[in-house]
Each structure stands twice: as C-alpha cells, then as structure tokens.
Length: 66
Image (tube, rainbow, N blue to C red):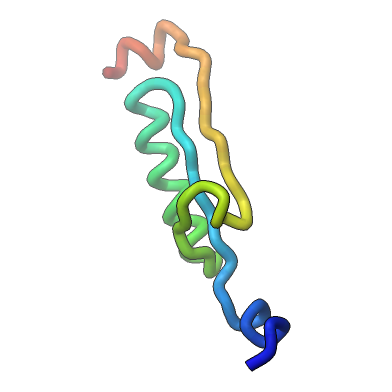
C-alpha cells in the first residue's frame, strides 16, 4: 500500500478538549457522538486531524442547574 492509499482509507480523527463546568462535559460528550456519527475516530493530542476546544463563561442560571 502506498502512503496515499493509507491516507485515503484511514478515518479522520478528532479530540475534544473541555474547559468549564459540568454542563460543558455533557456538551463535549454530545459533540464527540456527533463527530463519531460523521465517521471521525477519537485520537489524542497531536494525532488528531481536528481539535475542538469547548469552553464557557459561567452564567448564574447555568450554575444554578448544577
């Protein structure tokens, strides 16, 4: 197999980095599920084709839900 063939058949990869509250953890899990449904495979750090950084600014209403 050539490098081009391996690249064409290898799944695209992603990593989701989560910063913030507990609600962000849930959102990141949903983002991961969406990416996996689109054919992406989870990878670590520099191995990922895309990196999603999920952050938030805590608002009083969101903080009260926890």
